[in-house]
Image (cartoon, rainbow, N blue to C red; front, side, top):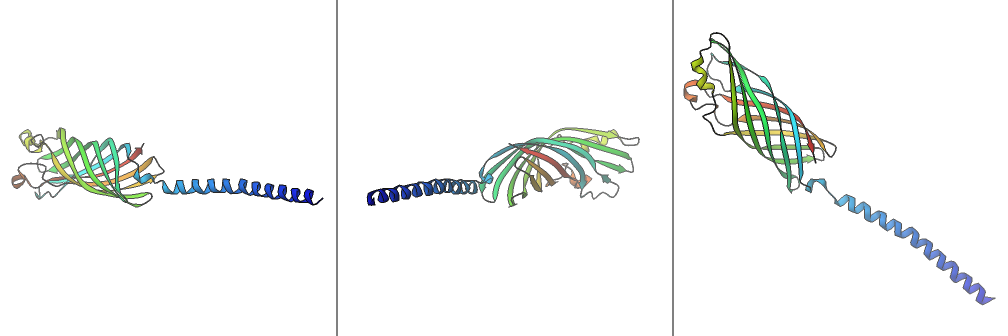
Length: 221
């Protein structure tokens, strides 16, 4: 009888230990999976993306009192890249097609300039929160083409001043912000200003510089 009771106790203890193992092992697995998810950080993943949006461009520092300018609309689109360096800093180069220009009302008539550029922003990106980032840095702009539209009274001989083909590249300064909409989408807002005059005769015609307010939606892969 004692042997039967002893064997019963042993079997009961074995079943209790097995039951505890079944509970403990899944618990350990769950805890390990939670730690793994917490350790993974999307910041340290390089992201390639596409962006598209609209520009509002104009000129600033127009010292000629007979020359007043107004903003015009345009389009921007291109490729983006986000390369993490060290949290919260990453390198964000881009290649964008961008339409810029301005409208002018002078004593000679009305004038509008539409210019097409390839912009290459080379930006430092600071993640200030999980969904908000601040960007700043230089931008190299390559003029592609310019279309000038004159109204009556504007002499065609002044077109040389407005022609930007004599400039191979233009250096800009950029500041901006981005708002993440989940993992794959972001809203973008930026301000860009030429760091050098739009023309080579600024002493004669004035120090005209292009400024652009840029807004868009980005998709990250």
